[in-house]
Length: 159
Image (cartoon, rainbow, N blue to C red; front, top):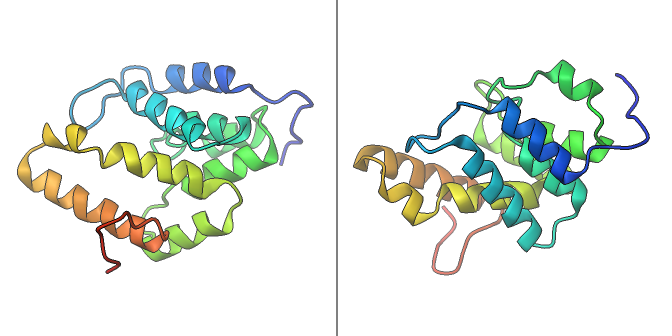
């Protein structure tokens, strides 16, 4: 692995990299993908996240969505912790949800980023524009992941 440079990207610089990497990408509702990234970064900030977590929030889907490569991440001017968080929240093909959740829980700082990601993904206003089958599938997926991560919200039961 390449050693991290002395001056890691600031959250603003990570934002610029993420916006460029995801340029032209849209979410399931057809909205610019950068809106999701911004919401996750703001969610991390609102939950008391630090600069490393906010930078990771901006980049949290870049490798998973193949907008940036693992090789890019290895050499990126990011702290080891930011890279670890990005790797932790990057789903791997065929990976069971339990293994994904365990990796997030085992990585310092990753749970807060995933919590903000799930909060935006499960936003009722965001889900409302999807067709019923997709809305139901995603709601069940996000509820299960929140339970696996111990993020069950008031009024929900663990399954």
